[in-house]
Each structure stands twice: as structure tokens, then as C-alpha cells.
Image (tube, rainbow over all chains, first blue to last red; front, side):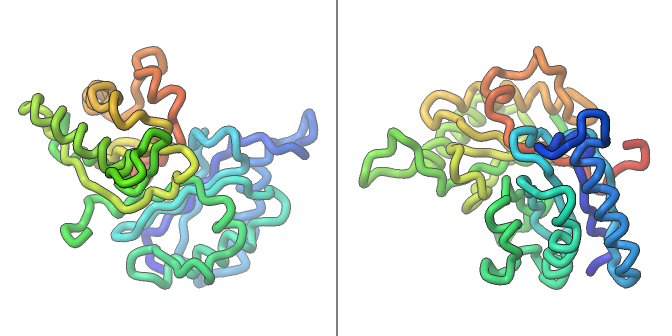
Length: 127
Length: 127
């Protein structure tokens, strides 16, 4: 995985199973992702908390960006159970030159939860 | 508006009012945006057609990206009537340092049609 891949995690996403006075789903997902990343010392991935990715209707949400690769935004992610799936999916992303993982190799959570994708910036002439 | 702002336009979006054998809504929106941009010689904006932004349920869709600014994805855009609104909105975007236009100054089509936003890449330390 390249050094400059960044996983943005929305920390303000609310989840259906949030406790009334507990942390929000997005914050719980952030914690779970950091814990999972600690188990993968070889994963050159940076996790960045973000206050709102403007996908408020489909929590929890994350975005992954990397130079020369497409950016992807995913929603409908379960705060408690999806951290491993997300990092597995990003390992596949990081193994591609352009960020486009063949459809069948994508985790189901990514196939169903894709919100948008944006071309590498600046757009390459070939696209 | 800075030189490196890019407007990605999904050309594969289908619109409800597409003629069965005519061009798709996304392609019509692209043409309308190019025509509108021709009327604004001072707008330093590049328009790039893209095959699918993965927002297929909310056509027509565009994304705007610029170095040092947030990337925004918008959907639910009318192919026939929204070109001027989009370019007006992007002029406001380009007048900000970070791409974040105050809510009240955003076109209604952007307020209602926002699909996602992604931080500037690479994420700045202050965020």
C-alpha cells in the first residue's frame, strides 16, 4: 500500500444503535479502525478523522484518497463490525495502480455502500 | 477562480426525460456546461467528462476538485437547466481558500443535491 493513502472517517455520523449519551457511530468506527490498523504494522495507511463528509443519510461513512488513484466514498458502514472489512478492502485498493478494484474482489460492504467516486486529481490526460 | 479547478461531469448518467434514442442526461449536461463556460472566458475552470461517478441513483451528477480545496460531489442536477447554476456555484467555490462556501450562499441545487465532500488532499495538519 503506498505511503500517501488516507482514510477519512466521519466522526459526526450517528448510527441507529448509538447509545443516547454514548459516542456516535462515526467516533466508534474511528476507534475500531485505529485498533484494527494497529494490528497491521505493514499497512502504510493514514487515518484522519473528519467532521462531516456530507453523507448524513447513510452513516457511517468514510472516504479513501491516494495520489494517482480514484477517491472513493462509502456509507452504510456498521460501526461495530466493519473495521476489518474496510481495511481489507483498502489493501486491495492500495494494490492497484489506479484504485479501481475489480468488482468481484470488492467487499460486499463496498459494493453496496459506494456513495461516489472521483477521478485522480489532477485528471490524467489518458482519462 | 484558480487555474486547477476541475469539474468532472458524469456522461453516463441517465435522466428521467432522456429520449429513448437520444443522448443521455449526463452527456446533455456536459454539452450545456461547455456552452455556458464558453460564455465565461475569465473562468479558469476545466471540464472533464467522466464515465460514471458511482452516484447512479441521483442523476445527473458532477464533482468539483481543486488543490487545497475540499472536493464536492453533487447529484439530482437537471441536464437542461442547471448549467448556469453550477458555474455560478463554482465561481463562489473558487473565491474561497478552502472550497467551503457559506451555506446561505450556496445555490439551492448544491444544498439539496450534495452527495459527499472530501477534504483537500493531502489533508492539512490543521484539520
